[in-house]
Length: 82
Image (cartoon, rainbow, N blue to C red):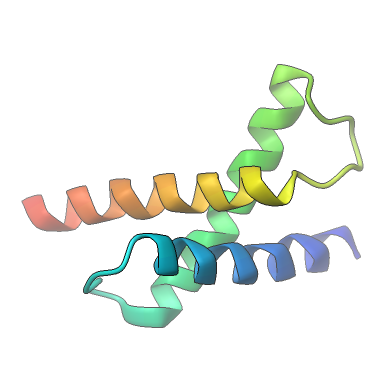
């Protein structure tokens, strides 16, 4: 059940990250949603490593959005160079 929470949080975080960082992405909406899910997972992992979250807690919504925006930024940099 926790995985479904991460996926839902990632969907919303990906949509907000796309709104914050508009532009044309090579993969479109689907890739942005997947990057949002990855951002939510990244925020949760880093939050646990840093001690902000305990095992079983979800990452904060703002942290998930920042993680999704960071991954979207890195993705755009990598796609430009290839």
